[in-house]
Amino acid sequence: MAVKESLPAPDELSDEQQEAVEHLLYRLADDEFVIAERYTEWQVRSPTLESDLALSNIAQDELGHARLWYDLLEDFGYTESELVWERDPGEWRHSTLVEQPFAEGDWADAIVRSYLYDQAEYIRLEALEESSYPRIRDRVPKIVQEEDYHREHAENWMSRLAEEKQGLERLQEAFDRLFPYALTLFAPTDEEVEDRIDDLGLRTEPLDVMREEWLDVVVPFFQDLGVNVDDAELPEQYDVHHSEFELPEHVGRDQSHTDAWFDLQEEFTHTYRKLDRHEANRIMKDPDEA
Image (tube, rainbow, N blue to C red; front, side, top):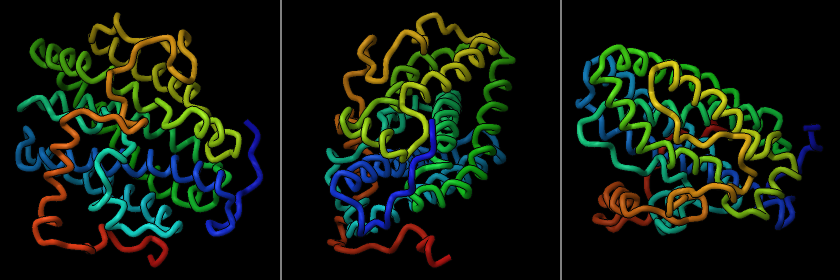
């Protein structure tokens, strides 16, 4: 795909351009924030001290990535409190993969989720490296540096679990449960707006191409481990809007969510609401001030 002409500064965007930028940023930021919240549930519960520290570091990284994307939404007049702590849970646009509760006590669930998500994250970051929106393009290099470690951590643990029969069975159970939700990572927020994102060059690959690339990586990897993927959807069968197969009832991108999300949102905003806050400390230092 040819590189598009760079879009203007945030305050110079047309209404249609701004809407496209916002939809893309909400996809990115909400995914990162919610999966970070889920990862924190494994603190002091991981199978080894090393894995506990690793997943805690990954959660911190993902929270930092969310901060980078939310910061760009603040260019349009939003505050961090409005974006995170005060936004109605029905307005979030993260994939329903990241909001799913973990299977109780099952480390394989956390690892399979991480692998499915981080492979998709790597591919979508590649599609943002030459984004026509400079503010997005400039944030990508820092995030890419950390994603390599995330993928390596998940791959190593999956290979380790697959060495034993019980571990392989747990990988299979996690794959069967999570894979349909993982497909929602590539679902559109709004079909017309997603087309505009591509037309404006905000990303250099459309959703269907990214999904096919993702499937071409993750499906063979699971097969090599011994996980049965016979029911996995194959990339060449489907178009960008997923009209040829059935996604879960709740997709996330279209602001439809499972009950698990509303419980999680209630939990992480509890203190803010309990203290009757109207402003919160920033998640991290403003990246533009670094």
